[in-house]
Image 1 (cartoon, rainbow, N blue to C red):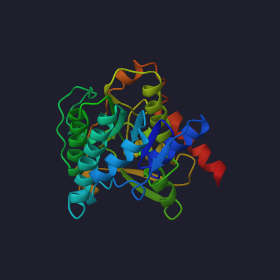
Image 2 (cartoon, rainbow, N blue to C red; image 1 turned 90 degrees about the vertical axis):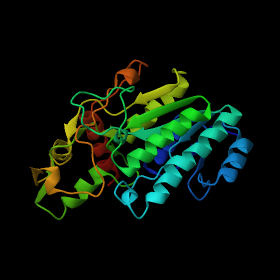
Image 3 (tube, rainbow, N blue to C red; image 1 turned 120 degrees about the vertical axis):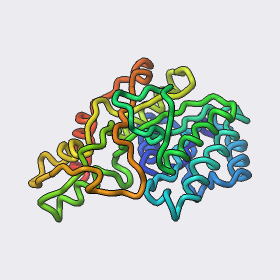
Image 4 (tube, one colour; image 1 turned 60 degrees about the vertical axis):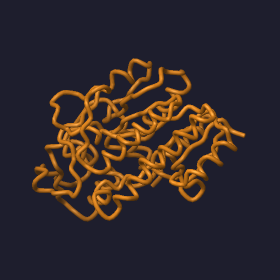
Length: 283
């Protein structure tokens, strides 16, 4: 019986975490939504009570931000709030440490400087609201926990902005990308390593923020992704690229608390370069 349980095992982050633990020879039990429906409290209690993990990496989430505004609003709250509460309460009952992934969307993006972990939250879209309620559910459950807010996630497994840019460049010689939204890109590898780092070093429980170091606009991120490609990348405003869900204009989160744990955070440019090299090697 392993000491580690992973929810959302086949998602972008869950897949990365599984591969990291495989590399390190760490045994785990991993479940996707078919193996463990986190919205079913009875099933969650049964599974977690039976397995008795010491650590639960809760990677399961509903992440379709625009769809969460309307037709999948209920699913967004069922997974990100009810599901998280079920996992957190079951974890607390058996004394398992819980690692929960949250988002920069808990902030409204109106602060000019970096958001600290204890800054007031003010989510403006349904996804951000649900993830914040997930944070509150984790805190209310009464167990040991790490909440990690992250942003602009990309990685090998699943859909993300980097893959979208690489796909579009095959059919376009000019792309337009918004240049008035600023944040920090996050490589899933860096995030997975930090999740394990917090547990392994027995860092103080609580709220953390983790992305790769440095910040940029989506336009600057796209230019770096495509700098070796024969394509023009042009900046546009958010008004020229309307989206259903509100996006924070400036959601750069402070990494000071994460760095204080002794975790070395690569720049987003270095992380992206390593990721792109790995993708190229697999082609």
